[in-house]
Length: 171
Image (cartoon, rainbow, N blue to C red; front, side, top):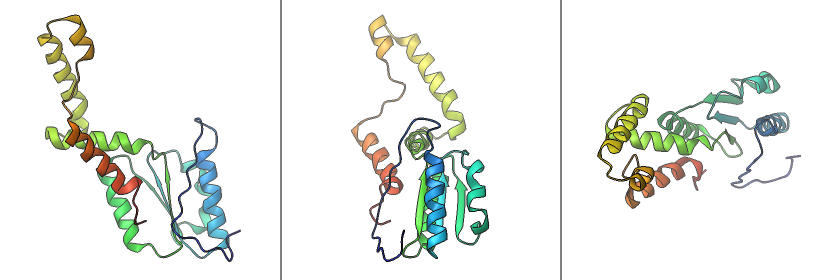
């Protein structure tokens, strides 16, 4: 399948409903890469759903298949940077549930700009929301009140942060 094929930088996006087999498909591709090449596969999951598939690559684990579960932005970003340092030509990075990364970035950004831990964000936002409701004058503004005051620069920074891993042009 991969013999004689010279891959430059390729991207493969697998989409589908919950339970449709996206993670299974990633592990099938990983298995094919490991069986047919001498390359390494780095698998990063943004949740913990990959555990049931690890047996498919068990004989390669810790030698050419590396699996990580990262559930916040800082850990995901740091793991990605560490992998890029040891990657060689032909190695693969696979990311499962990358859709979660946008939530991670927003939580990270909110925590950094609010100077609280990510675990404290929900309480902080709830306090802000309650305070907003107390100060609202009319029903219409109460319905449309925002919890945070993100401006265009904030959204640009969040998008840039996300792109540094999810859409990395140097990978």
